[in-house]
Length: 116
Length: 112
Image (cartoon, rainbow over the protein chains, first blue to last red):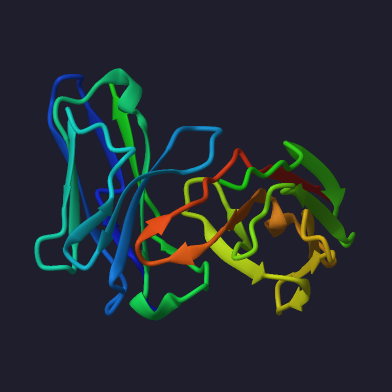
């Protein structure tokens, strides 16, 4: 069964350092999402891509976060500089373009970030 | 945005049927109701989606009354492996924006 791949699975960094997460969605899925999930809370949308274009990044802290999906396939989420409050699970999800009203997102296993 | 309210936590025993109710009083005409399951240290997994009446799949059933202001996820004969967080989402899905939010979900604990 096809899966959304994410790396690294775990990342420990010191505050003020740069960190990057990578996501490879299911082949053919045009829509890609990055979520942040703080322990004990539900996932919070950071950015949504449709192919290589950003559809929604209203919740992305643009002073330190950036996201790209240059060729409309895999994607990178970067944080620079990392802050203590960025410690969370970063989840990537994808959905086919022809999803219509189907609310089925396919999530990766996530990248857990700890900022010291 | 349609706001949802679910119990924060529930306990059950193996073999029992579990019903988790979600309230969404301001659901819009085009909104669908979607449920996800999340195990610790994993991404959420789609369980079921419905618009009205009843939907059933191999994992769960979703009951939606005529006014659609609430919905109930039913898990038949739960096992220990059903211990997870369950999220109720209400919104209109399209490819050009997301008009729903994940709440804190319902933490289900299945006891032996």
